[in-house]
Image 1 (cartoon, helix red, strand yellow):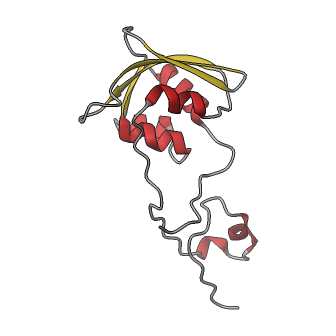
Image 2: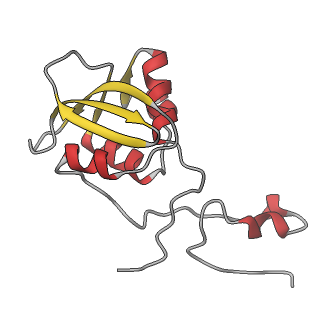
Image 3: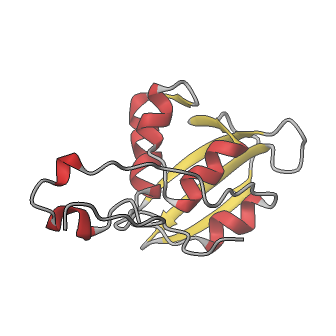
Amino acid sequence: FRNVRWWNAPLDDPGLLAFDRFRKVDRRIMDALWLRPLDVVNVLQARAYTGDGRLVVGIGDRFGPAGGRYELEVVDGVGHCRPVDAEPDVELGVEELGCLLLGGASAVALGRAGLVTGATAAVETLHDLFATRVAPHCPEVF
């Protein structure tokens, strides 16, 4: 076949590597799912994590419900979260938190874009906590 077309393939689909000249593949990336957390404590406790660590995360939310400072401690891949008054190690908006929760964004890349702020080590810890082994994929169209 000279041309193959398909849509809605995962970002890390191994099929791309099966092509003889996979660098010639014309890929278009589109949003398929967007997440806006409202209950930060419960969503951070419900998610699985690949690493362990502890951070105070400042969440900005123009509309209010998710905004605040939260201590996230991950032990053996299980997150424990609670609101705190402590100074944040990292700060980000609720939109960026949504990206991290789905696993589709790198905290380090968001930091380079100025969307996550904090000391380099803290941003790297955030990155390590939210990293996923498989890229997120939404196969449903709704």
